[in-house]
Image (cartoon, rainbow, N blue to C red; front, side, top):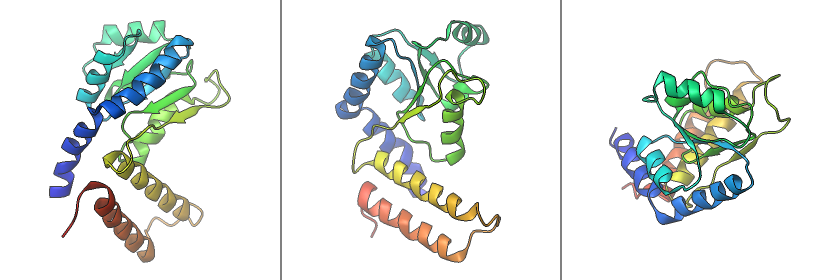
Length: 193
């Protein structure tokens, strides 16, 4: 429980570093200058507003607090040059089929959220693109890398289970996942005594 309580403040510290903000601003400026839109996912609303304040090109913001009228306006004006900053709550019920890129400012902890965000752009029979780009710039040796490695571990577990169709997690995978998470915590977050 103490570990979970530390994650949000740790992520916030990394999200506000000049290194991370600078990487995203550079990538977004390049897209905006060439009129290529994208969907940018944020797990933390403060991080969304921090980056939004520093990004000088036109962009839209979708959070759970976005009004119905504003959501309708964004949906109607959405095109291949639109850059949208969103949280998972803000993007619900939206399809962004006119853009070809999803950027993750924060890697979600849940694989379902990761799939949902990509699915907002990669809509079968609706998307204007055959291939979708997923970009995950991150700060090494921080909670960013921890979240990416955790997603990889969870993805590997799912790939291992799906062919067998078993709803039960095999014991050796439980042990592997636990040891992998402990190693990630030690390597990337803080020392566990």
